[in-house]
Amino acid sequence: MTKEKQQKNQLPKLKESDITKLIKDWAYKVHPKDITLIRNNTTGIPDGKGALRKNPDSGHPDFHVIYHLADIPITLFFEIKSPSGKVSELQERWHKVYDKRGVRTFIVRGIQDAENALLQIEKEFQSHIAYSYLGITRRNMRGGAKVEKGKGTPERDITSATQEEAETFSGSKQKPS
Image (cartoon, rainbow, N blue to C red):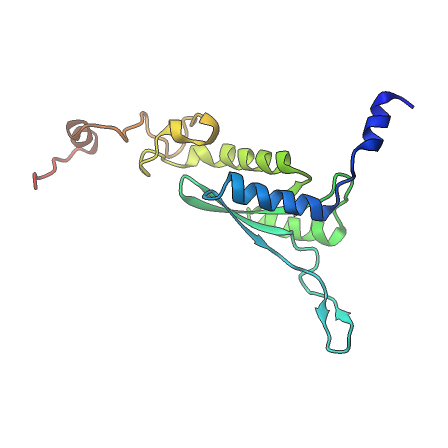
């Protein structure tokens, strides 16, 4: 057996519940103001006779995630899986339903997958947000991301404009108060 295989066999196997706890800790400790996680419980529903009847929401993604990008809430979903876990047919159906509605679902097997999901969302949406209009400078973007020129992006960052520059840019003069 090679050293690589021995090391792999010695690592503890993470379960889906372990990944879920890691993601919750990551969201609440690393991104407390950026992320809201809403847990979707889709276990069976008690039938009153000691058994469980099937939940009609079975297969729904594990977390509804609200990511606040430039103070704009963006909805996405996290499907939590163990490193060797597979997506079920019911889960794939839900993912397709949300994909048709323009809501992204990400398979998350660890913290790095969750971070990558946020980076992908930022990349997709940053050219559609006029950060200067919101009073947010580009350099305050997460990870120092640079805003590409695109729809809704001003030619230059005017959040620190002087009164004279602001009047010139807007084409109107403000009456002194």
